[in-house]
Length: 146
Image (cartoon, rainbow, N blue to C red; front, side, top):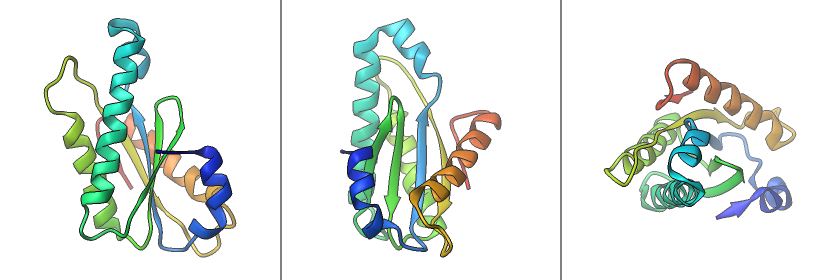
C-alpha cells in the first residue's frame, strides 16, 4: 500500500494521459468507528485495501495498478493504460469483495477520472475524480460514477 509521499515522488513517471484514477471513500466511515469501535474501522480499511490490491493484481485487462491511501478512509487506485470499462470493472469488483458478509456491513463510493493530455499534475485528475466521488455519494452512495 502506497501513501501520498510515494505518489508525490512518483508523480512524474505516473502522470500519463489515458491513465484512469479511481477515488474511493468508505461511506459513513465515522459511524463504523462510533458503532463498532476504532479497531473495527481499522479492519474495514484493511479489508478495503486488500480488496483494492487484489482487484488490481487479478485484472487481466490492467497493467499493474497502484493503490494509494490518501488519508483517513480515502484511497486512490492508479490504472495505467486502462479503459473506462476496465476502471469500472475494477471498482465494481472491489465493491463486491467488501460486500461479503462479515462482522458488519459497509459500502464504498467511487469516482473515476482519466488523466488528460493537458494535466500538469495529479491534482487536476484527482479533483475530477473527487467530483465524481461526490456525485456517487449524492446519487445514494455505494456506487461508481464516471
